[in-house]
Each structure stands twice: as structure tokens, then as C-alpha cells.
Amino acid sequence: MKFCALASGSSGNCIYAEHEGTRILIDAGISCKRIEDSLASIGVNPAGIDTILITHDHSDHIQGAAVFSRKYGTKIYATAGTLNVIVSSARSRPDNSCLYAIEADSCYDIGTIGVETFKLSHDAADPVGFALVAGGRRIGIATDLGCYDESVLRHLRNADILYVEANHDVNMLMMGRYPYPLKIRVNSPMGHLSNEACAELVREVRCDHTEVVMLAHISKENNFEELAFETVKQSMLTDTRFCRMPRLMVANRDRPTEVIELEN
Image 1: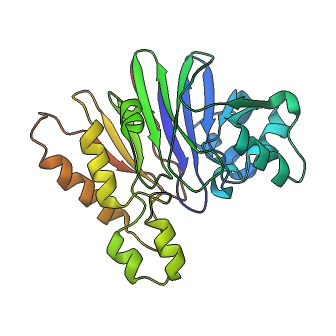
Image 2: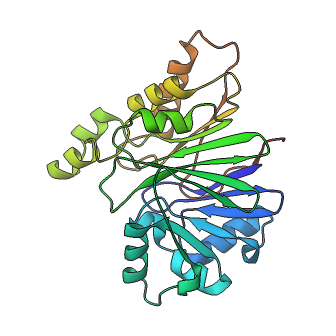
Image 3: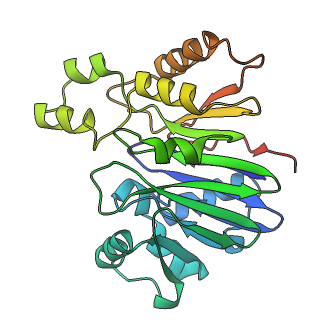
């Protein structure tokens, strides 16, 4: 299985995953042109994308979905609440034949990739996270969540790649220039995970065969990549249950990560 974060952050989110000819995007929160350019930079033809999985309806996750779907006939999988926003907010709606409603806590097959959905706590219409399963490998994806429960932990456990949110440093957020109501929203159970909460989540779900932990959706205003990295790194270093450290990475807001390839 191949995995690459094309963009991550409040300015737009998009992930690429591939297994044996099945090629999917998770979120399309950047422009169609930028998705095309990002895919081209890793050697992928946009016309070969089978499906876009959408986590939730905020613009930094759906911005390019309708345009991309219309241009390439790409299927869009999202919960009913999220699909309603995609359709109503698009200048020209995607073809109905490309829209597929999914539900949380369900499993779907997209080509050779199994997709598990799970409910997330976020102030969106009907947000979900995804676990991708193929070739005996597992990728857990959870961003835009203010807190987590046992269902989230269950779907992220045993992942070979963890793609998880480390949105903000609490002190930076509270001392920063955001209006007070926005500070409360970001740091609420319906908001985003802090660096410390991310570190605790990783500690809860990391396993012996976790190869990569990738930190995502890092705030431009209320965090530093280095701070998020060190917070999670130190937490993992003090966890003596494991002999091997996963590779720790940060998903960048402006450029794709390297393509990570998991052997079957």
C-alpha cells in the first residue's frame, strides 16, 4: 500500500492512497488544479483516481471535490450530511451517479482497499474518520476531532501508519490572537486535538508494528511543526513497552510528503 499526504492544515487537506491499481483520495480540500499538480509531482495521473473519501463538510476538506469529480467522473463517498453540503455549496454539482452515501461504523470495499468508517467528535454535519486495510496492512486516519472514545481507539489500533491530528499548543492558542469564542471552540471536545492530546492518543493506539506516525492539521497560528514533533516524540521515547520507535513525520500544508510504501 502507498500513502502520501498531499496537503494538511486549515488551508486545505488531501491524502493519496493506493493498492494494486486502486487509487483513492481522502478529502479534497484544495483546488482541483492543486490536486492535479500534487498528484503529478508523485507520478500519479489524476484520471486514475477511483474515489474520494470525505471526512466532513468543512471547506478545507471539500473545496476541490465537486470540480475534481465532474472533471474525471470520480466517485465521492461521504456521509449524507456531508454530501448535502458538498452539493449545496458547489457552483456546479457533481453528477448524481458519482455520489455515494456512507455511514459511520461501517465497512466498504473500494477496489482492493477495505475502508472502515468511525464517528468523530467535531463541529461538522456528520464527521467520520477512516481506516484503510489492504494487503495485510492498515492505515488509521483521524483529524478534526476534539476528543476521542473507545471506538476511535479501536479503529486506530494495530495501524502500520497513523495519520493523526496535532493541531495546536494550548498555551499558544490561549495567548494568541484568536477571538475568545474561537479559542474555546478549537480547544473544546468538538474542536481539534492539542499536541498533548495527540501524544496521548498515539500512546493509546501505537503497537509493535506501527512503522510511521504522521502528525497532521497543524495550526499555522497556534503551533509549530517542531513543537508538535517534539511533544509526540518525547511521549513515545518515554513509552518503554516497545523496542522500536516508529518513524515520526509531519504532514506539510504546502507540499506533498514523500510517498510511503508498505509491503504486503
